[in-house]
Image 1: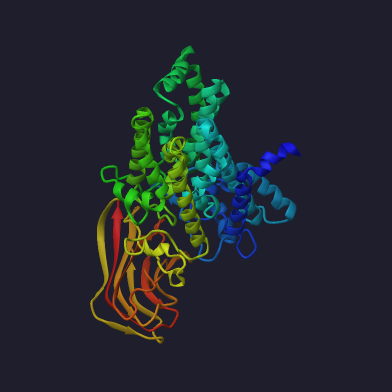
Image 2: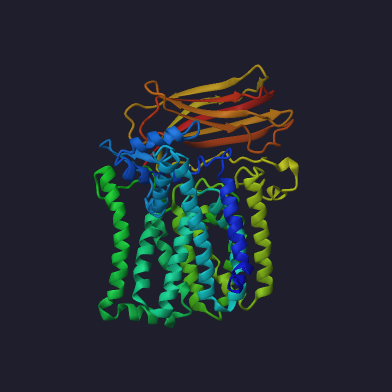
Length: 581
């Protein structure tokens, strides 16, 4: 019994149990495990039933099963088709590989329970949740071990440090709520990559080199841009001589260790080539059709400092870490320069993606898996200047918990803010702030705008009452024979009402005469619920209309006064732009 006491006294154990509880609780829908596989996770997961259950490169059989089990108004956004008419999955298969054992368990559970063995019934949703939870908890463990190995002076406080880092960053959110996204999987793989390097540094055993190659391959298979994790290797060594010693040893004996690592990397990455060939008929395929990088115009400042999703504003502990790095200018210039090279190059690539805000609902999500490496300078300095940094960690951990609680409670609808509401949103004790803000704007599509359709341009004041239900309806006929164009709507207007509006929405409704397939998106008619009360306020909304297979013949945009409210509108402007890359 005594040997278990240290484990029971470790606060990390109790934090892990809380993490597991929040994960399960946040993914129950009316007491059942439904809609666990959602958002990007639909595409990541789709490989498993398509390959192992249906042997269907068109994904039609798996999509039929998914639609049958999905929530109302389900639309898939992960399948595209090439010029030859062959469908392919936009997403990379790394998460499917990691979820494969749990998918097998889901098959067994479905057989035993009598549930449909179709890849999407409740046993499969539960299996996906358990797989996600497994990697979340393993990510917690490898972070703990990495801190112990890299910073042995902090061994005794490592559990509290891990808890602080989890709660002060976006890790808590993306480990417990949005299980379909890739970030907590990548965080685990990043930690495993660092752990294997640290173990190899101490033991120089070949098995760790093979593991490093396999792990790096899986990192790329989950999210290819995360190959930049190799830039963190110098951060795991104390100085240049320490790093040079390991590289000299690796390249000795005809570089056999490097060959083993490369072989492991290629073995994993080759799975992507095989799946591309299986789906599209080509060994190489740019699956993110109509999307790409703007390397010439990265949204660098916006990604770091904007109220919308700036890393330093939404995870201020990273700013503290960046400042802490300069305390190393005399003590360890090697570490200082290595960290800034990694940080700036990684931030440049993240900021260059066309959708630079990543449609994120909580902080700046592509930095999530980098949390350990982003905070390494702060951890390094903690050894010498603990008091003020520990105070900072505790303060930002508390702020992170408040933000997390406000998000899962529905208080905060999303975290893409503006300069007008960012600081006001911190007043979580005000009841009027509950679900007050909604950010209704999206980044413009990748490529050039080739057409602008003006559907409404009306400066007059319009008075609406409870008898007006569907108002300001406009219609857009989509061009025939289009090839991978993207449609993007923009709505501007001014609103004035006597009280906050309830159940009044801007509706985007795309339809096809020859099928029942539709796209329906209702956006509440406010950016700030308390704005425009007995005065005029500007509102704006924008976003893409998904049309991956040229599905739709027409798009209707209208205002639905479902709540039978009374309000005034003026300066109504509605556009649909067409983009092509």
